[in-house]
Length: 110
Length: 113
Image (cartoon, rainbow over the protein chains, first blue to last red):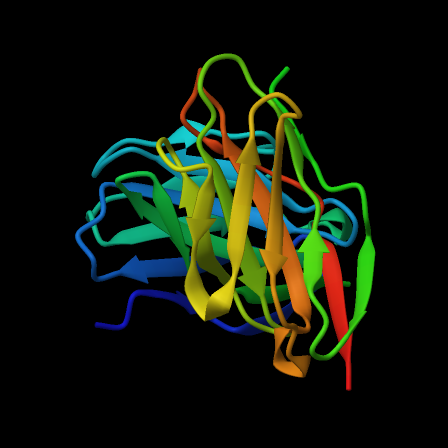
């Protein structure tokens, strides 16, 4: 049981480049979330999904898109990266009220 | 607006001493409260939660938290700190309108040998 996994672990992008972060969970959880973590700001919710085929905006959705084509996967896309998107990104899944987090992706946008 | 606050950016404690990491919350209705720990370069790990029942909740690694409704607090405690407890601790509350978690800004716990 791997829990929640994220790929890649690290990435450096140039401004304007695009990329997709992958989150996978093997716990059959319905709810999945993408957060970003910045110093002194805790975790902020970007987008979330309450089930396969559904997505919704969180607190800071601008500049990001998501897809949940399969229940176990939740993808976060950056279409045109900006330096303000330099952050650590965490995925989480939730069943019964407790969230379980992946190890994170550290993204730097130059 | 519903919120959670961690008033201390950092807490320093000597190994073997008791520790407390503070959290206060503001929600409408009954609160669901959580504590998570984050070790360096790792994701958040669930420690414990309060939903209902006994005000003293026991969790992983010897941690416990006390729910105090009158003070709207949910402080994290441990009777005897270990150096390995040094990490970043997050308090969170479930927004009763949206069911999403609202996280505090985190408290860095440093336990000195």
